[in-house]
Length: 415
Ligand SMILES: *Cc1c(COP(=O)(O)O)cnc(C)c1O
Image (cartoon, rainbow, N blue to C red; front, top):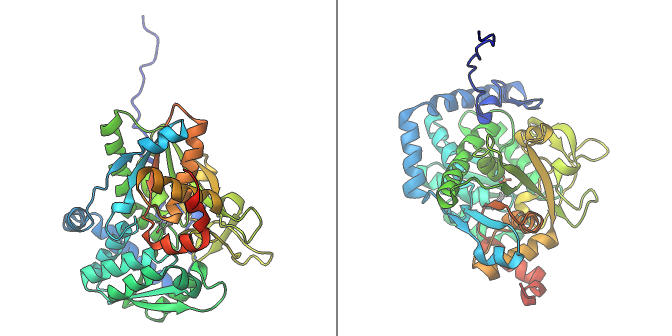
């Protein structure tokens, strides 16, 4: 007689992206919404609007059509044979978000946010920008939907990222220079927040990454998830298998969450690359997950870099889009449960990778994305039998003048 109790079928766990965040926007202890009550009313309205549209067939149909006909998606996955052969190890592949319309992954969430703004009847889109990529993407979305756009940008970044400032103006956006503090990304966020608080009923603050108060970390991830979904399918079609590793740079964390979320439930190592700038001393880098601690800033709880007074610390990276003193709450969560690994690349390593990819593959990466490429090259040497998929978050046209002026000597090296 069989004495074994029959095995009970238990429903498998939900996919990870459905497990977090909870209804209040928490990824474990990270995330949430720490804003004044009048702003919380707006966040609730945005969340209700989002919950409605993401279940609406009309909305999904419109966004899919935009992805295909306006943005030019799907972007390809490309095998870097020259680079891989040269490095002499694992195989390196790129998800080509540099070929997404407007030159970076950011348009993926900007089109979603602007579509939501249209549904909510908002009359103005407000945002901050670092490298100018989010500003350009939002200006593009504003032009498409016919909604006015106001972009706050630090003076330092305005000088450094001139081409993007011009692009925003041509696209019809108003660029507001930020003249206080370090005059970079963090101050731009403060300034944009203040502008939004002056008229939160008629305007919407389109946050540029998987950060800020709930529901933005959720919404931006969902709008970026298209990257991971496409990349997983394309990679399997190309190679018959999953990659062993996925690598992405982390500023706020949107391009990384986009590609990671396609592979969270797979046996794939996920590596988030933070900017180590000039070195490990506070003020010389923006590696917030690596060196930071728990705290609340800009309306959410995450891991961040703070000074002795607990204020956001000054940060630095050669890549303007990465120099933010915190990262999205989902990255803090995924790291805390051991699902992702956080690693770093310095300015010098990123610049080297910038030239290496340009010379060997004919692809000029954004300085942000060059951090991911730099780490992928290292990983390829350490893991010669493995496949490495990198999210090439953007193209480097915006950086060429700055790089040649400051790092022109790298152009004479052998790659
Ligand atoms: C803005 C930007 C980043 C950093 O933002 P995340 O939210 O961390 O993705 C990375 N790469 C490029 C090209 C960018 O423009």
